[in-house]
Each structure stands twice: as C-alpha cells, then as structure tokens.
Amino acid sequence: MNKLKLLYAEDEQQTRKDHIAYIQSRYDLTVYEADDGVEALDIYKKHKPDIVLTDITMPNMCGLELAKEIRKISHHTKIIILTAHSEQDKLMQAFDSNVINYLIKPIDRQKLRSSIDIAIETIPKSSDVDENYTLLSDNARFDMINSQYYLHDKKVELSKSESKLLELLCECKGIDVSSYDIFVSVWDDFEKEYSSSSVRTLVKKLRKKLPEGVLKNIYGGFYRLDIK
Image (tube, rainbow, N blue to C red):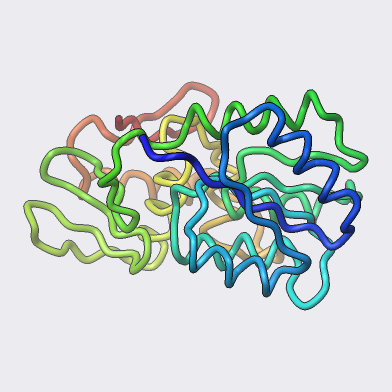
C-alpha cells in the first residue's frame, strides 16, 4: 500500500504545528496542513488525502462546509472533526457528513491517536476502489455522487425519498440506523411530526428494489444495510 496521506486544517498555527509534530512522531504519514477551509479544499482536490482532521471554526470556509465538499468528491475519505463547541446542532451536522469521530478542544492526544488508528484501520486496502459506487451485491450498485441505483447494469428508478434512504444506509453500511434518524434524514423537515409507519412503508418500498437480504430489519426499530 502506498504511504497514507493526512490533511490537518486548523487556523491556530501553534496548535496545528504541535499536533502535526505529535502525529509525525507516531505515524509514517505524508502530512499536509491548511490555515482555512478554502486552502484545505484546494489541497484536498490536489492530493486526495486519506484522512482529514479539520477544526469547525475556521475563516473563509468552516470545517463542516469543508466536510460536505469532501463528501461530494469522496465517500471513502476518513474525516475527524475538531471543535471547541459542544452544541448538539453542530455535532449532528458533522455526523451528517459521515465523520468517524469528533474531538473536543483542547484535544486529548490519546483520543486523537485512537481516532487516527480507527481511520487507518478502516481505509479500503484496495488501490482501485471506485469512489463513486457502493456495491450492494455482485449485480447491484449505488452511485453515491449522482444518487443513481443500478441493477444488472440497468438504472432502476428510485423516488427522491427512496434515493435519500439508500444513500443514508450506504453511508452507514453495517451500522444499525434508527427509524427516527431515517425520518429526520429523509424528510428533512423539523415541522413534520415523526412517523415510524412512514419509515416502515418507505423501507418496504425500497427493499423490493434491492437484492434479497441486503436491507435488514433490526429489533427495536432499526434498519441495516448488510453488505461487505
């Protein structure tokens, strides 16, 4: 495997330098650094790092916006959010971008190391991973960039809600996703009253279009995309 690459975006220069020195003392990584989100995105597009550590509060583009832009390009990059804030809404936005962890500043170095270890362990080992697609079976795949589902190389039409549900499940593959989290993600309307029956109906419709056994019902109102 080629040497892994890490991007650290942090506008506090001394903090960034200290943490980079710590990381380089413990990992054999190529490390890039950025002062703000715009610079970080430019570096990301040029070098395609495997791991991104980003502070939330930065000039020009915040860490959450950076994470969203990265997710438009790749669903495999491992993102770790660093924040001095503990507001729930900010952290929920972070997980909407499928980050692997968030760390509250000042950063505990053991937690930082643990997060990087997890990131390294979960990076795809194959060099030819197709960034655009999540394979659901030998004959089915979901285009994460364009939100399109293919079965036997033929496009299968999904409703907007079905597409959003499948995208969420692909992002959380192998993880039990609650009915409530599905409802919030798919309907994206905080004025709309939560309905577990609406989620069940949507899951049932999507399941009919997927390979048999891929979309699992989990006891307690959870669902999981059971793929490798």
